[in-house]
Image (cartoon, rainbow, N blue to C red; front, side, top):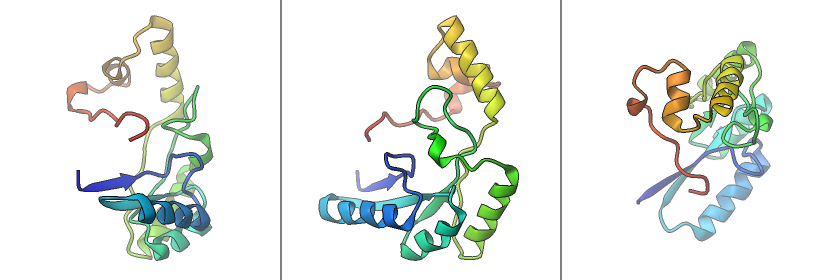
Length: 146
């Protein structure tokens, strides 16, 4: 492995300049490979500050986990399409890149409940329930802690 991309959905989330700088300081001391840190998109005034400090991307989350804080941390939820548009504008005016963690909250909650009730808890079960015709083509997330 020669590169690590750190996502903002960590505890604490990387959604302020202070959190970004603290994470960068730790990585600079401990990393033995190249790294890039992504900033969260939920605090719009912080976006330009994180990008100017070296955030490689901004990642807004459109949903929150119904049961847990990972991977869809409620602290990182953007909340609305209007907010998402403002995030896009903020990132674009600074030449940044935005990668949205998309989904529909009602679908996520409905299919999560369905999976829990039926005991079908695999990634493929969930992907099929969400209407993905070919779950094998959907990348599995990295295990927690990587």
